[in-house]
Image (cartoon, rainbow, N blue to C red; front, side, top):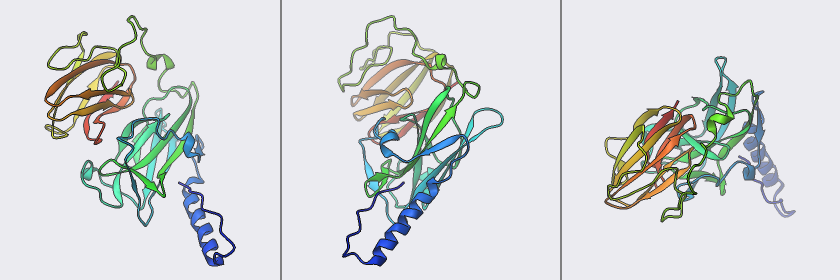
Length: 297
């Protein structure tokens, strides 16, 4: 992460100017080396900031020693890629997720082409399936309470681009395409978000389609009863979400970018076609609380 400093005025001591230049060089050092298959990008405007929901755009300023994160992508000999994300001056604390903020600790978020895909709690990860083409891979630091970490107002992140040839692609473009529409454009819900490909009802009503899988979410005081779930479903199957909450919330399925509101003490039900393979998080949009981890394969 690099932030431009103001031009040193003539009246500033020479020592201050030298110190500022040295600090800039240190900040740039983590972004100078990229693996052969990637190209480091420096422009924050091109890194997908704001392209996905940011849990209310909550940010938190970092304190010294300032943290940073570096990203490398290595080809996996067995196919696909390995993602190596290394934070500096920042402790990964998976056991503290969704708890109170503590300076210098938290987790990371992985964005692919501007869409949030996963939380990262370690340094090594298997990349989700990718189509042929150029993909933007961005990792940002997040605090225990899901605020985006910033330094002087700039997000602490690192972005690389990955060029995937047709021979290297781990998923075909046809596998990620939406199925042909055979109905009119779905209506928008009361929160202004587009509906998915099946009906959404509250007060115990049922969805119109018969799902292949049903994920039941019981939410009390902003947390899933029994902890978050790990669910595996088949590619192109129909998945229904059946949720209840004692408070008004928004449920977000990252990767599919499905967002629905649920009223207090009412039941929400909606379904969608799981036509994108990979691992996706189902969260409460406001707090970032993880409800379920969905694997589509």
